[in-house]
Each structure stands twice: as structure tokens, then as C-alpha cells.
Image (cartoon, rainbow, N blue to C red; front, side, top):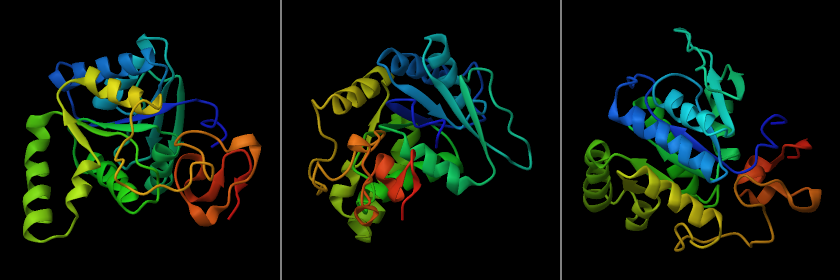
Length: 240
């Protein structure tokens, strides 16, 4: 927390570690990292190869902040060579908190179980109002269309397991520049993500990725997002 508390506005980028360097998705993720850095965002990834390496590579090449939250695995995942800050985690659940806590948005490229896990984690936190809604953007309509149609038809229409408005929590695009622009618009206050969802009072908690205002401790009983997520202030430790 101490090392990430000063990185400024950041975007977490997810995707498969198995994506080849000559892949179309790798090129898009690298461009995404470059564009995010150009907008002043730090890029946070899982620190490994594939999409993670590509996003870090793009940010690093643009002299941006390129952060990798690596994980210790039985088949060791080596950190990529494009990080300005590397942190290593033993447990997934602590690492997942860090992805959300310091992010203004998630960009999700094609990936496997881990990528889906991060996507649905963010969806659940927003749906249950545990974090303030922030941009959650899927890259690659051809890859994600089957999942999106299943959520729309099976989860919503057939079984009523979700609300129709839950499908507004995310967007799908094939254009990384469009994704970065959407994030910039929300971050700058010119757009609102999921305006239909209720919010906590604006003066109660910091925006995602910001510290507490005036250095004052925030009450943990009204957990919202960013540095108020789980009632933790990175400068003061767990205040619950």
C-alpha cells in the first residue's frame, strides 16, 4: 500500500498471459498502454507475459508509470521487462484488492479464468455498491460477444438472475483509443459511469484511486471505493 499510494490515477489492464507477441491483441494492448500513459494514467497489470507485458511495454515506452503486481505460482510467472515498479504477492485475494483499490478503471483484453475472475469481481463490487461505478471496458467484440449474449439471454431474460441495468456496468469496443477516451472523460468529470446506480454522498468518500481528503480518517462502515475500499487508508493502515 505504501508503494502504490503515490502513483496517482491508474488503470488496471487484464488479459491472457499466453498471448503471443505477434498477436493482434498484443499490439492493441501495447497501444493501450501507450495511450493511457499519454493521458497521465499509470498502468497496472499482473506483471507477467502476454497482454500484461504488452500493456506495460506501451506505458514504459511512453515514459509512463508501468506497474506489475506479480503472483507466486507453482509454474513460476516471471515478471516482464517493462516495469517501473514490481510488487510480488503470494495470495490472489490481496493482489485483487490492489488491482481495484488504486484503479480509476479496468480495461479487459481477451483472457482466461484469471481475466474472467477480475472482470466479474469488478462487476460484483459495482452491482452491490461496494465500490463506486468506474469504467469497465472489454476489448474485442468477437471474443466477448458469446459471453455478453449469454448474460443477456440466459442470466437476464430466461432466469432473471441479474437486472437489465447490470448490463450497463461494462462496455465492449474494438477500439482502444475509444476505451482510453471514455476513461479520460469519466476521470475528468465530463461523463458519469452508470448514472442510474445510487451513490454515497460525494463528500463522504474519495473517488477511486484518491487518498482521503485533508488526511482525515474515513468511516469504514460506509465502504465505497478507492482508498476507502474496505475502510483502509494507505497512510494509516487498517482503521476497521
